[in-house]
Length: 188
Image 1: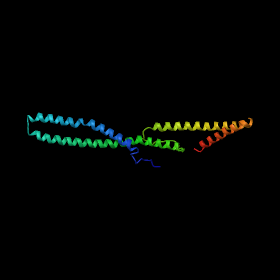
Image 2: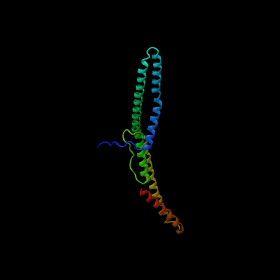
Image 3: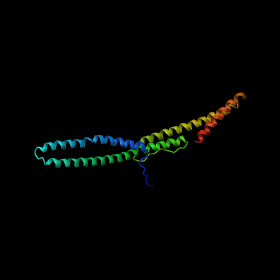
């Protein structure tokens, strides 16, 4: 059986794009220091070199702008690569959260999807394990409660045989309500 490979990387676009843009913006702000420092360094070097070789100033000025353009293009490429990497990394967060939301929706709609399992390599594997353990505990408690409701209903039916007729109506109403509760929960 072939391994499932996700082809959609934008699972929660608002979160993933916003997060990636924040990271890229911070990277851009922090990387402004390099071109400005190089520009300042070359300007100081040109001032110093102008004293000894004035013709060198125009050559260095051209090289300075070429270097700044190259550094800027490299920085834009690096930011674009960072944006793409952030999308890949955030889909390993958004995917499990999306799947968890789908499991909660199924529970709300009365369906049981079985055990929650995230893809290998997704983050928050412990969330799936915790969900599965919690849901197994809830199922076990539910079974125990259903067994107890059946016992209570049986006791009430036996009790209705020995109580006066005016009390039988109340016991029958309670018994009817217990049956409705069991039916409702058994249909889920």
